[in-house]
Amino acid sequence: MKTALILEGGGMRGLYTAGVLDILMKNDIYTDVAVGVSAGALFGINYKSKQIGRVLRYNLKYAGNPSYTGWKSLLKTGNLMNKEFWFEDIPFKLDPMDCEAYRNNKTEFHAVVTNLLNGKAEYKSIFDLENEECMEYLRASGSLPFCSKPVIVNGIPYLDGGIADSIPLKEYYEKGYEKIVVVLTRPANYRKSGGIHGAGAFYKKYPEFVKTLSNRNSVYNQQCEYVERLEKEGKILVIRPSEFIDISRTETDRKIMQQMYDLGIKDAENKLKAIKEYLE
Image: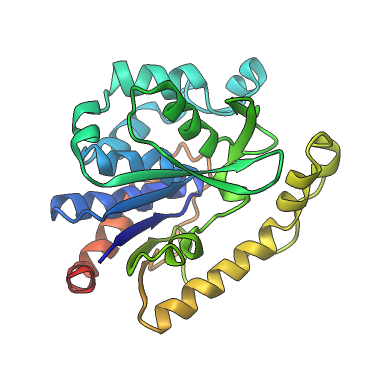
């Protein structure tokens, strides 16, 4: 029986996911594959490296730091997330990843990225955090459109995986994973409204990407309906915020960040018995 863990993105809403993952790690619950999208990838790698509490720790410490995330970084580097600080200083100097534990954990970790040339999602294996290509795919997965430069890997430009596949449940369900736990960062019944404008002018070099970006909201809503249908049929298990917390993608209020993480802890603890029974 193949098991999978799907981690939605959402910027600092991902602190909810961090709380869920910490409970899974504390209870030694690991799936065959974990799949992260955007913040789900950036925070989710700590699940494979078995570093409980790390996501909350470094986010609380560096919240509001202009070298971490913000307009200063965007104006200086063209990226809302500062590449050097995010992908060099924090993981290897300031709050190091346990790269050996990551390699030794049998759980595979995949990051979802969006190919700008064809507008399609790709699912990249992040097998080693000391591998430059892996880190670039990871960076691409969390690089938001309009406020990030495309990340070029092997000549192909990539951006945030959530553009093409925000909740990659269907991809892994159709690959034959029989037990799938989905961690969402929005409460039940959430749907996106409106559309994304200005993509054609901003990304005129990538017409297929523009189509994908323009359809993103409607595709996301279809994915939510797909999740709810499989959940009702008992084919998957879903963990989602049990209450609404008003938190922005780039939240710097430590109190709100802590609340989001604590909600993930609470909801995962409340579902812990169901998670164990489902996976067993």
